[in-house]
Amino acid sequence: MKRVISLILVVTMLSLSAGCAGMNDQEQRAVSGGAMGAAGGALLGAITGGSAMIGAAVGGAAGVAGGLLLHETKKNDKSQSSKKDKKDKSEEK
Image (cartoon, rainbow, N blue to C red; front, side, top):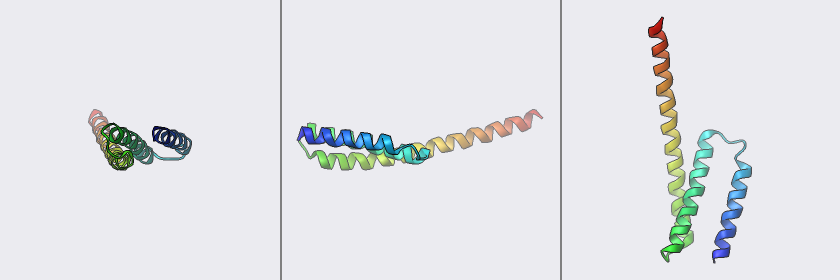
């Protein structure tokens, strides 16, 4: 069982690293969050004696949600700082 999980994680990581080249920031954060969440969920599921597959599915879903939330937060921070920069520049004139 440990070999299967290890193999799945290795194949997943290799395919994700090769497939991320053409993605935008939002897609990269969602995929990264999903992969980290799935790995963490599988690990916790296996350690606690539960199902590694269910742990991976739940962790992956939580990771995708976290990645998308992080993207929205960063996008809002950028727009706030650009508005502030424009305001500061207009006040200088």
